[in-house]
Image (cartoon, rainbow, N blue to C red; front, side, top):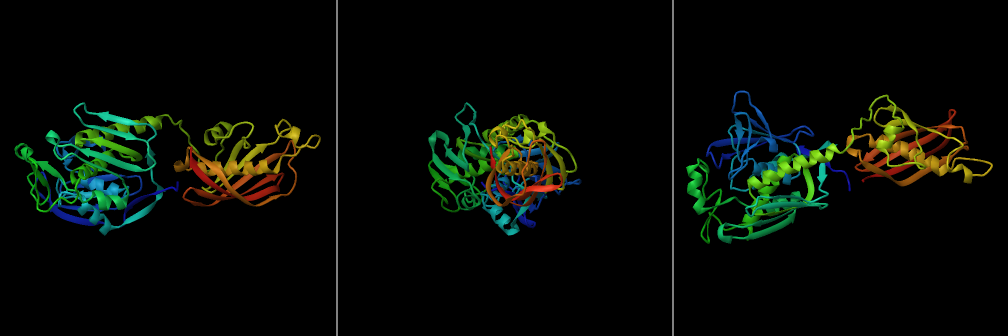
Amino acid sequence: MPTEMQQTLAAPATLEGSSLHTGQKVTLTIKPAPADSGFQFRRIDLDDQPFIDADVSKVQTVERATTLAEGSVKVHTVEHVISALTGMGVDNALIEMDANEPPIGDGSSAPFVELIKQAGVVTQDVPAKVWEIREPIHYDTGKGSFITIVPDKKFRVSCTNVGPDGRFTQFFSTEVTPETYEKEIAPARTFVYYEDVKPLLDKGLIKGGSLENAVVIRGEEIMSKEPLRFDNEFARHKALDVIGDLMLSGKRITGHVICVKPGHGPNTKMAAILKNEYSRMRSMVPPLAIPKGEAVLDINDILKILPHRYPFLLVDRIIDFEGDNKCTGVKNVTINEPFFPGHFPGHPIMPGVLQLEAMAQVASCLMLRKPENQGKIGYFMSADNVKWRRPVLPGDTLFIEAEILKMRRNIGFATCRCVVNGEVVSSGDLKFSLIDE
């Protein structure tokens, strides 16, 4: 699978409108952000213009919307803008507001999708960090709502909406890509049951609500300024909310999210579970500090990087790194090598193909030192311009030099050579594919 790179916005873009729950006028601006920064909100209406990370640890309340708080500073109803950014493939963005809640627009995330398209999306030079779910993860409220995430090579959402007394039971399922998000998910509007309107108003919520930014369900009747945009619009809007809320885990995932009667409470609980499970998974990875400058990797370091083991580990030590693209390894060739008894009896010579393999292993150490490649395996794709110039004998010290010429996503190109006593004994140009274990 090609390595995807992180994305941010190409330029700032601004949207004005009224908020749903507070009814305030608000101006929201989305801005580019550095790689690995994720999503941040900023309240520019306050004196110190504080930031709030879009992280599940900041979730304060989840009644009819997701609210984040940092101390006394709050931002309400963050799920629609986060959902739009996530669905459209944006990894890093700063969201500035001059009030405590984004504009509600028409109750969908379509206005934010248009805002993102207005700003444009650009690729950053850091690989995207996408967590592949390998085992099912489940959360059940015990009150009829549950979310399960099962392994899948894509990001999929399947959502069943069930209203009071089973009204408007709907189902929606799709792979989430920028294309499907924009067409199939973003236009779906928020909705409310008529019997819930007064209790919400009594709590000081939905002050900015109207039939222009929400669909009201009264019995079996739909109250709206326009017809339903989809037969299953409510299930689609629930999927929209799920995408935004789960991103508060801080991790994009590949997996199939299956949810029945989801809501902001169950959604954010699952986001917290995802964050904890990811931390638990990473804690199982032993710390590995691969130097970027001049340094030596001994055999124990190499064993942590390469999957090879005796008798096929053909590098004993990395003795030098030169920048990000060059390194030198050492192989001490002894008479005890397992290949000498058969190659050849009475005239032991190190096989040329094993010299080529030694070059590949040193080049792999160089490529796998990058954090985004750790845990992967390098597979040979081709070897060109291979030359063997003189025999390598027992007692020789093989210096193996590797230089990465270029990387194209998960494909690497390297030129390598083996040197004994200052003379080149073999050389070749190698092509690799880096694959997850």
